[in-house]
Length: 230
Length: 255
Image (tube, rainbow over all chains, first blue to last red):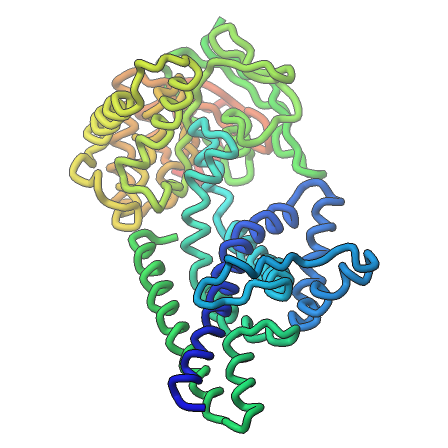
């Protein structure tokens, strides 16, 4: 196997990694906010329900969750439930979006939503009570205060910890390999099984470059929000 | 009947009874200063009046209209503004935006409610901006409208906060120790703005530790101690002929 063949295989795996990363981010950012509001709810059963979910998702290995999400629904329903195979016509970058992909996307989304929800919570709770009161005495309602006064201050505070999680997510996508999703590390390891060790370092360079791009973009966002102090 | 009648406001936090029946009356255009040592309940009283805390009992009537307590769903038309000790400007907005934000939100709501499609938000926005600029001129900050709160001194921030509170044309403007977070050099610029407002007959309730200022600017002084109004009177009565021992003690320790 020559360099060009390996490159093509790694690129195809990287495509899957990239879609998994983007999909997880797009879904878990809003879902995390929902988890966050749930865990801060004044309704006690709702609060404890979400706190329990977050505890389980943060308290067990992501690898375990991937396996559980892929196999358990089918086992519980005697095979009636199946993760969809939307393979045909869904191939971007040659990415394989079969039932394994959807199960992994689901597992990643809920797992990252749990982590994001705690970052949101920290951000929301760090905005002083006085900011809410200043909004209320100006006749704003709760929704207006949250979106017009509080939210951007929360965003500014959470960009650094969020960046950290987002970078971790890039490398966590390699865990999808555990149920046979053909992502970047899967492709590199397939080459290793044929006796080549260098493709895994080549794959490492893909991660490094991508994380480098993300670091740059997130740094720009942080800088963009530096015009005010909280 | 006085313009504002406050009677017997009671408020407890858990076991601690902070307000044990606070009340006074004032007329429109008057300035009332509330004096008293720390812990006497001045700030809690002001927060109850502005609706940031819910009083446990008592009543507030303004211009013959009941303001507190209200039945569920009942509203009142009294607009009370509040200026905080620690300014509380919105850090992500510049000076002009801090003043226009609440006005613009209100305009949007009104346009939505009226259902009048001819009313354009952009026109309202321009009006609000013009009004905000007038107010900022009044507090002497027209050259800072594009600055962010973190670029301003404490005195400047507090003057923006006053303009922000005035934007909604409050019937009564309250101040909660507006100069306590400022060093003496910056205190005067804020007090001057409040004096100017007095000259325009703005109805104001001021919680303050600035004795000289309270003496000069107030029509009436309310002296509070331990959650009750100990004594009320004109500045002359309170400062020169106090009737109660507690008032005398407080004045001798603060002057």
